[in-house]
Length: 232
Image (cartoon, rainbow, N blue to C red; front, top):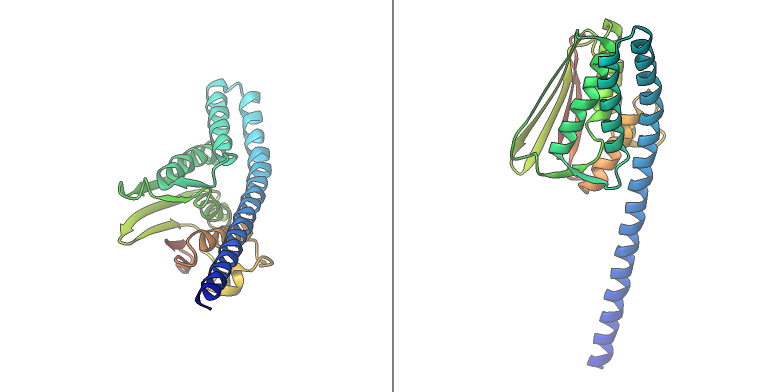
């Protein structure tokens, strides 16, 4: 009968809704787990290296810079362990600046940092800690071999309906093979290798958050640096 058909359709819709809710909750839990793993990685490396820097300042009686470094570290770690997964691009830019202040205190003033963000993008929602892994990659794989002497830049623009994030350095440059690996779909698998797990995890988080409506590409500049392009 018609009533039986309506009842069957309603039951089907209810099951579909429960399935969607279950999938959403499972995905949210997975994203939270990914963020916790990234926090753990940042906190261990970051704390160890920064505390070594503070120790050196204390031995040289550089109390002013020691206080500044401690304040910056507290501020960045408070942001890193925040409860909300979602933040704004403006927040990401602000705390990336704090992170780079600490890196410059560790590595010296020859490490230069540039950042610009379109005002229209600053209030747009994104994920916590999506910029830092790419900048860290620029430091570790681009500028470390040059004694951390060089430039790391971030430029965020609005190309409606997308936001484009360009992260670059003028370091040694990523190898062609590594660039091809990062640009391949297999790189985004959980077991990807090559020392770029921070980027791999971040790309997975971005793809899940934007439901596939994003792209991440890297370009090697033949020994003159590396450029990451993120479009969301």
